[in-house]
Length: 412
Image (tube, rainbow, N blue to C red):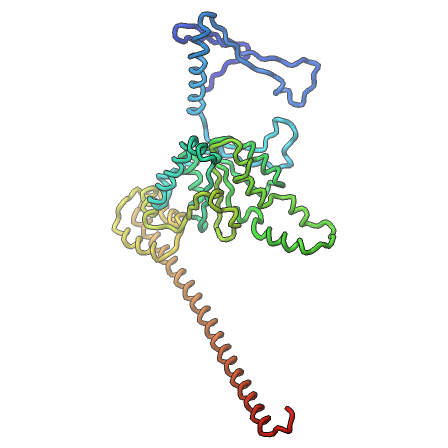
């Protein structure tokens, strides 16, 4: 149940023996004025009434008390929100246009349940703590109060779960930026301006969102061609988000607007990204989300099965070192199939899956060896044939030289 003061109602408040009267009022616009946004024309305000002898008390103590209490209530009742950007075609020129839509963020992920190496996890927690409490430090070194994180690794290694754990740890909102819906650098800039502080801006699978690789080389080649060509689809591509626009979005002048923001990129293929996009200063911390290790498995076993030690842990440790399996696959095998948790059955299912992953990895390695051996055999045969042809050429040259020496009158 939520209680609020209605229009033209009055509430009394006592503060250190002084009585204050708060009254909410609303100024209605004139009836003969037509407005496209009538709600914004309505002006609401609070009128505070008190005895004149309490004026010093109100100005020195009561106003700061009200503001502090209001901020505390706002923080206590604040709910994390997950935002997504609306298509540019849905925007309007009016002040009430919404460029972001949001829902309540209720992801249960925390660092305690995150399957990751404990040492690496603690490094991330310490870095986030340093950022959250580093407003004065960032101002002293002359940097905008923001930080970038690059999460990279195979699918299913927990990149999205890591983002949710960061949001829950910092109590920040999350802005999930869909670059394919952004039509230009101007729209990207406006989206950034509309974000608030204490937020995480996320671009997932940035290598698949838009083409950010090879743009510079393409422009260099195009400079050599000065022929006038008719308009094509390439002209439309130039109107979309460019690498330069994204770089300005990360650490340009516009990135200093506001504060306490975190920018996160995720990708499955780090090598596909432009080095300028992920250099230090833009993506300050690179976090590799790798395959499941034994320490990560222990976290999952405790979360899913409630066990911290088992006789099968030794075999699982060895198999995890020999096979590649993501934490998502490990968690799926540990998931109980019934309400009664059969720990042995779940661990046996995981061991079986690890054996299959190990065989698959070994088979892939043998195929690579066969391909390399076949290529080496081909190269050896090519080298043998080339050496034979060289010997024949030498014999031919020697024969011609000998013949020319023996018969000087003949021209060969």
